[in-house]
Image (cartoon, protein in one colour):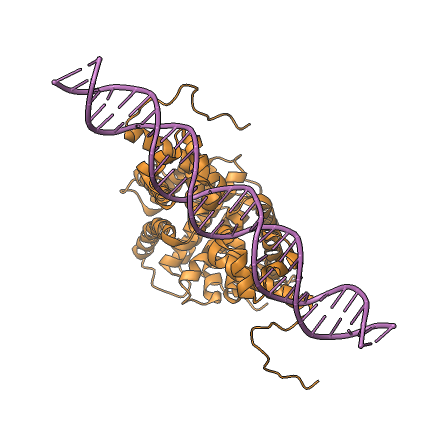
Length: 219
Length: 219
DNA sequence: GCGTAAGGTTACTCAGCGGTAGATAAGGCG
DNA sequence: CGCCTTATCTACCGCTGAGTAACCTTACGC
């Protein structure tokens, strides 16, 4: 059993299935994030993964299946990152604050995951849109809950300027877009980013709760 | 539900080049918006346009060229719609208000244009990203100008919670995402949408200007 | 040892699509 | 009417890339 540690470097060692699957998924996320779903080729993915193409088909199925596996894994990671960052027993604004920080922390650490989730999965129709839409819906729902609870706590009635879901969508959208913007302006910290949003949104929201309303003047 | 957009039974009349180009561009925008750049086939575009494939190549070049033509035309339309909607001699908040209304008006009227610009062009790398990035940069610059001028008017100093460009990016992003959200919730009017944003952003921004700042508490 | 299943590969098929060559019809102009 | 120009079509080519068949090879239980 005195095996040579340096056998021919080409010959891949035999590894358990779970390890290979992880390698493949990592490679797939990287390639999908670089080229997008359609331009990504299974050949390149297999190459990056250091594995031959049939392995992918054998372990994770066809291209669509592979992509869905990627989305699910990354969506799960993101969701978990945000949820473990939130402390459920603090006021709504602090929950939002922690959630935002966790979110930007995730984006910073897993850029590629974020790219795949946000930029790629949305454009490719079909079964993928649903997956990502579910994630975003979860986010909107979560935020909407915070917003509405904060509003109700202060007795904010339903009015034309206020729609919990609409505001939540805008907030989530703003957070996402700011994340995108961040990818090209990485010279600010995640805390600063979250702080910008809080100052924009929460202050404005507070005013709404207080009954202050912006209305167009006559110009 | 998919009505027949097929050409009329009689074989194509000879039409001036400008007309054909318009037909082709319209078809291309429709098809690109439905399937995305890669999944869109030149055959389908030519079919929808009521024209044979070589015409496209002869008039507008290869697939990439065609797509760039689409982006440029739609970006131009959007920009013009927003700019003609803005009245330059009113206060910043009213300018923003009018700009937002024009923007949502455009999205409502030219859904497909918006889809191509926002969802498709971003994901396809290469020469396209630049085109769209330029458009967004123009928008951010425009909004940033409004925000900064409004801030300066009130003597707002540069501080950690305030970055004109960052806020503008967040606002533009929020507006875009809300537009996307709108595509699936078309039961609100463009005015209401713009009103939500104004109430979120402008109120919050006013607070900032007034020196009020949100900061995390100890939880 | 030795059979067998799981890990792994090479080398192929085949469809779809971008792009083009070459034929055809339609007008304008003498 | 004949002739040229230009608009337009039919029919094809070649490549790229998804997916697969068939084969090899190591580990390990008995």
